[in-house]
Image 1 (tube, helix red, strand yellow):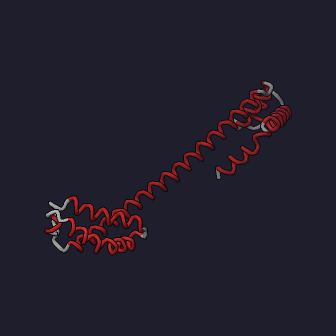
Image 2: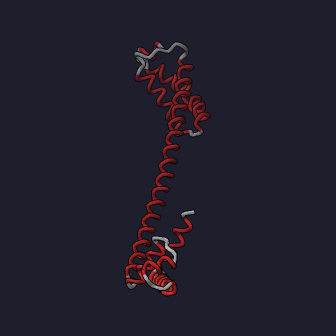
Image 3: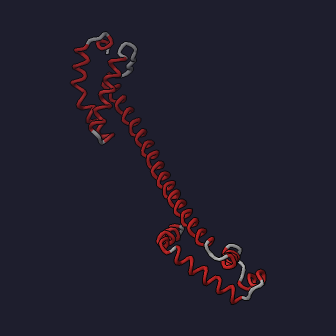
Length: 183
């Protein structure tokens, strides 16, 4: 180490040639990726050379390098683990958000088309349908409130449903898809 600290490139090169391949194999046993293993070893040697004047090695330089490669490899593995967790979280979140947005858009489109079809009904038929479907009134309650017979209420509901079926027939696959995805 003293020779390296005194800028002896030949000693450093000899040390590099002696331990480079061994350290790469060691790092590869940890990382299972030879390219990354070589990167860890090269960084360890580079750090020693760059900090040669101030570095303190309390054991042998060989032990120091093995420890440096080991620590760098573990840090790299931790970094990969965190990165994968973030990627998985983002992927799941983005997929769920995208599915929710798509579902909401389709539901809004279907609602607009249904509302347009309802608004196209004759006024009395429209009122009967809204009281039945939106306010959940029985046919008898609607008949009493509108001063018409229960049979007339039934006829208005039949007419409204027929019109809606015809006007919304192109949206049936969308309706089925929305109903299936809610469960």
